[in-house]
Image (cartoon, rainbow, N blue to C red):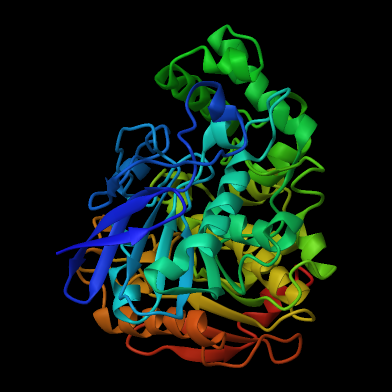
Length: 490
């Protein structure tokens, strides 16, 4: 059955199946084509009734590199209206709202990923909004004469759209929770910190993200300048807009590969390499217009006063990057300390992890140290920074993928919290993922979006309670791995 809703841009037609109506691909800003790709998002409107029964266009981006293209869903849907939202709603009024920002290292991803289907949230009384935002050079490249952080500006525009329009879909604009994973989690932490997003949401969920992600604009400019150089055009909005999108994406891809294989701070900028590690070629930058400081510092100073926070990681985040690539298997006991030292890990931390994990291979220790360095420890620091200003709750996802060696790797929790195991296309779940765990984890996200209380004590510096999601049982653990984490000063 078709259902009509009226938005600030015009009327849209969604599709109702059972008790849930889906409105897909609704533009919240004008198509960012040509030089508009390097401008702030602009208003959009249309005449008549716009069809919103099929997924909208995805943002221009390269595919994931092998072997990750076989592990992560990344649909490509052509079209100009890439700045769009998907809305799933059960109807009614005054319902809590969850706004989802996808991950993908600020260069991949979309709201069309099958795991992000919001039907289960709507079924359980939460209006789910999935957001597309500009990626790569178009979203986060530093371009002379153009506003920086265009992808963040898109996210803010989407949140303003939610404030103006969500009541038409049964949502309460005063009960908005923002959530995201990986780059989406970093985006959520950044949105917590910036004045432009203040008042646009009430709660925040940071999954496998960090509040320490921000590069200096001058450093980040080196990446965009190199892309323009490779294209043979001026480093400007006009220059970059003069080439085809496919050419831009290919040049961006080649620069990203070079950054990853040759992460030279002198060439690419010290802050860009220090924060992105060659894995994220582009990211939010401190431009002193939208983003004024590293998000963690602003949050510690009270930028997110009154915002409830749910944050967490998977147990084996970095194995996603070391096992499929073959890095974990290649690391020997002799190479391990040198490899970690090259990543800025103090030798005493490496020695402590080797001593505390005698049953693990050098590759597993490598993954464990980096997992804590760039995921676990930053998440704890975010919770401690926000704790004086709003209740903060921590979780860890510990169920292990059946794919050999991956463990509870990066992104594995997504189909559980969305309750989309039945339609998830990633082989990470192996057809054996326990639905009971999805039931439990999804229910927590629904409860937090509805009440602000996930059902366990808030995090503190003494007891440090962490809800650990696993199967057959999940449990609340006080100060997990306290000795190892103390090495990081948390």
